[in-house]
Image (cartoon, rainbow over all chains, first blue to last red; front, side, top):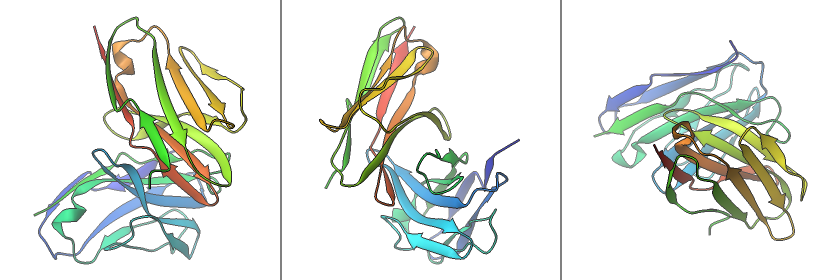
Length: 114
Length: 109
């Protein structure tokens, strides 16, 4: 089944403890992206990647890192999480950028930082 | 500044009603406008619009884009409780994709 898989689904952590949220897609998509969703703010892009080894900042990159060493994987790393990073996170992918190619989303990771 | 604005923010209707959701945008180098439906988890794709005046339709849902007035509407006719969701509008411009805050639709039986 074609899908974007995120793990974990739920994560509770403490301030400053490094964490990684994994994302994997099995559709051979070139484009991958991370979003966070907060009430009243919609989905805001954190980082995106147009292809392997190519990553760029989105609108809210501060406090996050990503890497794209393989086409299928695009992990999101929080080196020192803070409470303002408590949010619902989505990974998404599309065939080639997003023009004429809608995003496929993972099921989300709900992160709580205390 | 807001580039993609959806209205209303939330809406409660009864089954069978028709609803119209709005999405206005202010961007340069517009490429496309997309609608997504988000229930309890991942947003799912509904429509992609690139040309003015051409209606996209899927069952009871339809959408149209006005590139002159910079807005799109999403219509849902004969609403059902299963239509309850957040409806997200996203606009692609340049090399960016920006989402609106969404409209929360609740359909009461």
